[in-house]
Structures are given as C-alpha cells and as structure tokens.
Image (tube, rainbow, N blue to C red):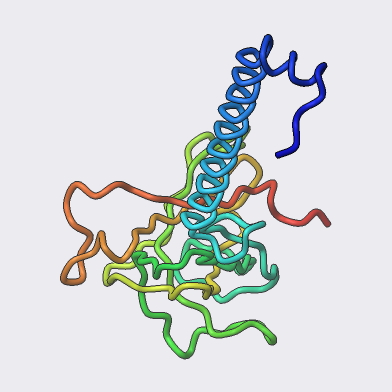
Length: 202
C-alpha cells in the first residue's frame, strides 16, 4: 500500500472536513445547475410545441392586399372601384367565417382566382371624412364557410370601404367552436382587421 506524503497526509488529517464540505458544495451547485438547464430546455420545447403557426414569422390569421382596380358592384350604392384582399389561415386548424356564394357571372380581374363572398364589418379608426362608417356588405343568405389549415381565400370590396380612416374586419371561429353549422352561443369572438393605411401607396 502506497503511503501519502506527510504534507498531504496532514492536509487530509487536519483539513479533511473542509475539503469534503467544499466538494459536497460543488456537487450540489453542479446538480442544481443541471436541473435548471434541463427545466429551461423542457420549457423551450413546450413553447415550440404550443406554437400553432405554420409560418413562424406570420400571424395566426391575417389579411393582405391582392389587387385594386375596376370592380363589378354587388349593390347599387357601390362604386365600380374595388380592392381585392386575401384572408390567410396560418394555423394548424381550419377556421370558420360567415360567407355567401358569389355568382359565376361576377367578373374577377385576370390573374385573380375565383373569389369568395365574405361578410365583413367596417369601423372608423381615424379621421374619416363622413364621420360614420358606411354599411358593409348586406347578403341576406349567408352560411358558415371554412378555410383549411395553411390555405387562403380572396374576396373583394368597394374601394370606399377602405377610405382614409376606415378599417374592415372579418369575424372568425375555430372548428371546435362551431356545432351543426352554427357558432355555439357564448364562444369568444375572434376577428382580423385590414386598415386603409395597409393599402399600397400610389
């Protein structure tokens, strides 16, 4: 058996308790650090797992500008100037909205896919010249329409509905909030907006 040098032997004999306590403390600190790192990693994984967006740099549901030009009015009080917008579903679930059928005779600009009828609201969000918001589309026959996960639809509206100081909004719900073709009573209201200042400048 190999004997320890006298100096080292004295260190273990006289200061052994201090060394043992120091080592124990280091082990405790290291253990706590590993536990905290593991917990933080699990937390990050949970955050990633709960992100319902397909494209992480985009909102869950949003509207983008598609086109502006001459448009066939749906109602007699609408101008022939129109704006085409695209409603995107960037979630992992289908979304539902109130819509209506657009007649096949309704003309759509070249290069624009067949549009959907979307019920939307209008609100004043700035200095609007007429003060009160105009009346939005007035379809008497509407039903629940669906946008699948990762899909989008195009819809149009008269240009005056996005005059300076106005915004349009579309209410929507997730599929579990709809039952037998109707939105269940008491379910929360989700909505997505598009503002006049979101239109491209000429």
